[in-house]
Amino acid sequence: MANTSIEFTPISGSLGALVSGVDFASELPAESVKALLEGWLKYQVLIFEDQELTNQQFKSVAHYFGEIEIEEFIGKIEGDDEIEILGQHPVQEWAPNPCLYHIDVSMQEVPSKGAALYAVEIPKAGGDTIWVNGYAAWEALSDSMQQFLLDKKGLFSAAHRKALDGFIRGGQKTHKIATAFLQHRSEHPIVCTHPETGRKYLFVDELFMHSIIGLSFDENDAICSFLFKHISKPEFQCRYKWRVGSLAIWDNRCTLHRRVDDTNDRRIMHRLPILGDARPMS
Ligand SMILES: O=C(O)CCC(=O)C(=O)O
Ligand SMILES: [Fe+2]
Image (cartoon, rainbow, N blue to C red; front, side, top):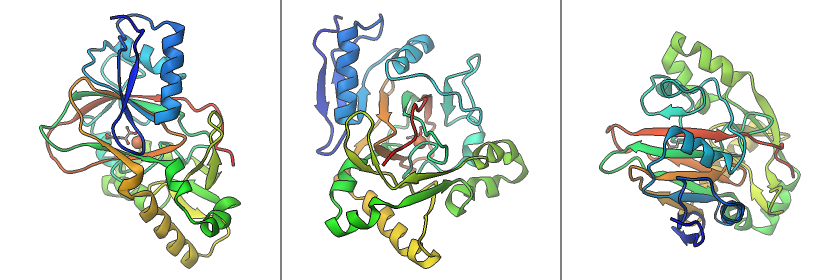
């Protein structure tokens, strides 16, 4: 298949698009990569269905979007030191819960730029993923709330109740992963500007955002509850029902995501995080 007719079909009114007309079997020409990257900035989440990717091809696709990040705390597929596996390795139960809206590794000074998930085995129904448009969440706030948030910074860490939950339930077994997560603690602006689009987005996260700096405990309770409720509105979302062979790549700078935990069926995903290249900036 030639890569001459790339098409994007939105999957919601807010973000996310199915991409057709791309064949990852051979290296993409520069103009196709450019079209994909432009589509990524526009739609924030790209989904390619019916893929049959080798591990090497999966890595090559991720490479079009950036360098691969090595996260030592997530288990890898056998014989590979980059491709992560979700849904099988026991470390999953002990990790911070991906069913809360989050920005990947937002407690790092430089969070991932993006991530790619490739569906290997999926439930008959359930186990969807939801992504949230951080631009839309920002733009929907009132002028007064925007003014209030503009100069605020958030404190991001895995050392608070929601993020610690898996570690506490896992006890001693979680020592390594807990240590890896807990060594990070970062301050980021709550309102960030995307380095490539120049657009503002809301950078708040239910899993790792501990508090807004400068507010009291009670004030944080109220404002953070409001923000977490705000970012979970369906108007800012797309929701994808996985098929075997679907590949999703999201921009982790201006989106949040969560898994929907509504099935006990096996769900195996391969994953490649894309290394961040800059701190979130206001
Ligand atoms: O499994 C999913 O749907 C999402 C998991 C997740 O949070 C991630 O891959 O970063
Ligand atoms: Fe995630």
